Length: 338
Ligand code: NAD
Image (cartoon, rainbow, N blue to C red; front, top):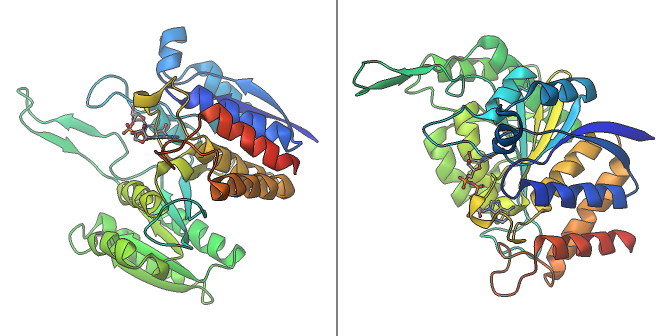
């Protein structure tokens, strides 16, 4: 079977790591015609638009996209294209697994948790402005809806059930944000009753951050609102050795977009230093989603073997003895041949 999906190489290290992912998928025997499209800074250079219509049309048609990281100017310039893509395609689920791989120095071994972050609401709605002409104060509006809470919570519980995960933890700040976070917590308690076989508890975000560092083994599936999920998933990446091994999926009712958790890493762009494993693991999630489970398992095993051997790993994994993006990719390809 062959597929047609959208490929957005992205900015900074994006083109190098997406090229690596495409090679690995092809080497695993999966035939994909990639409709290559632009977004972010590279799209501004080409089309004077960070999110051209042709990119949106391609994703709408193909339903699945693999996306490199996109640069978002801090505090000025165009709004996040990542946020715009999520809104455009109703990608309300942000799924970020955090798993330890042998060979990577971490505080803990055998971590295996999944964070589900509501991807569209609350403080990422982009409803913000200065409240006076001298710009001495600014306001942002975080809207949380019952429907938004219900669907992300249900997704997390369904995932737990399907993947034989034992426990779901809902993370909130309902003691202070009594309405927005309160709505999320109340809904979590309601939905939990529909899943009597899955254990449920809740944690306040600040305590949660500490608990994850002190004893991550108490967590299995974590579900939370947008901003908390953004921060906790980076914390979880830190627990498993950094951003280089952290993949993510943005899922909606019809369309899914797969990417690495990390950004465009402008500090190492074009230097053959980027670790391609996160986007390769995102491709593993993509293949798993379309039922190409055998290829997904083989690719993940190949990545794990290269990392465990430790001879051909990138600088973020071993700063004293490292190879480049191209070389680690070739090692993964060789491992797939075994
Ligand atoms: P970043 O993730 O790009 O980089 C943080 C640090 O991690 C840097 O030192 C970088 O060199 C390193 N790093 C990141 N990915 C790496 C990899 N694959 N291999 C080796 N080292 C890696 O975060 P940032 O510097 O805060 O953001 C840079 C840009 O990326 C910003 O414009 C930001 O908005 C954007 N961003 C995009 C996404 C996305 O497209 N999904 C996500 C996060 C950040």
